[in-house]
Picture 1 (tube, rainbow, N blue to C red):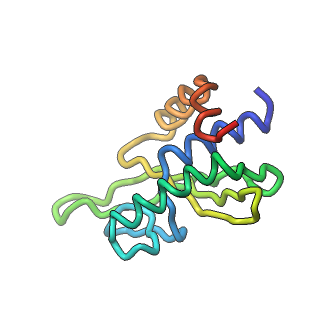
Picture 2: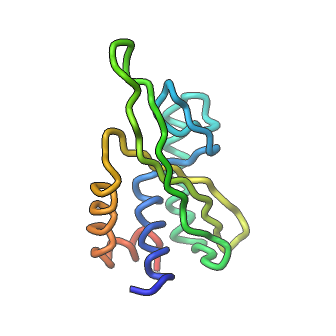
Length: 134
């Protein structure tokens, strides 16, 4: 698999499993924030439209970079230590010039488990093509 194919696989995973975000992490929410003010219906509708837009407009692979991996802390409850959360955050550019920040999180997951899950996702080329509309 070449570098572009790897980038496409990671972004297909991000688009499928992630959420639109403003890029800010919420310790108390244990998730990436968005601009929908906790209105899950608006968030779901925006993500659905975004996924369709990816398929119809296409991704600008020259401007889209590989998402950054990080570990964040998240509040679980008053009687436990904070949880460590593996995250991916990146900006995908579409061919019409629009850009979207996408965040993915996995609470209580070690990086090796995360890497294995992404590797399994990569092995499904048809799924990647369907998500990206290619």
